[in-house]
Amino acid sequence: MPLRFFKQTIWILASTSDTNGVLGAVEVAGPGGAVPPLHVHHREDEAFYVLDGEYSVFIGDDVITASPGTWVWGPRDVPHGYQVHSARGRHLSLIMPGGFEAFFEEAAQIATPETDPRNEMSRIAAVAARYGVELLGPAPPPS
Image 1: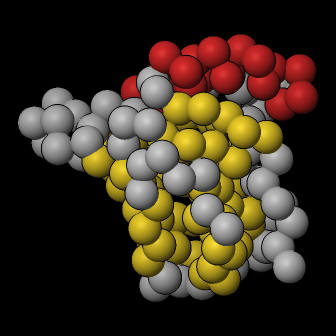
Image 2: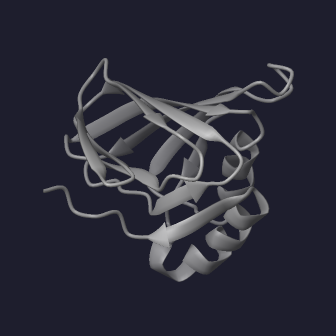
């Protein structure tokens, strides 16, 4: 069942119960301009694989231009995020170890498509913190 998370749609492809805790996998589709806040996972590593669209992926101080077929590694404790530049974007996110995919299920109850993210970021940050994730604020504009 797809989850709506602000203006993006997320499908949980594999959860910790499917992989004996090894990883969680989600597919994310969103409109141009989608840009989640820069954040840090303190428990997980995260890999991005772009399926459709053009992205900037932010990993630490690096900005990676990503198109279909691009793989980007986001190690734990390193700030990361992305921005969709094309009309639509779609990517896989693999999160190791598993468990963080449950964040999307919980946060989607707050971050509905009708919700203004500016009004709900403190609630989303509180949910993220329970999953060991720190929201740092807006992603930097690509240079």
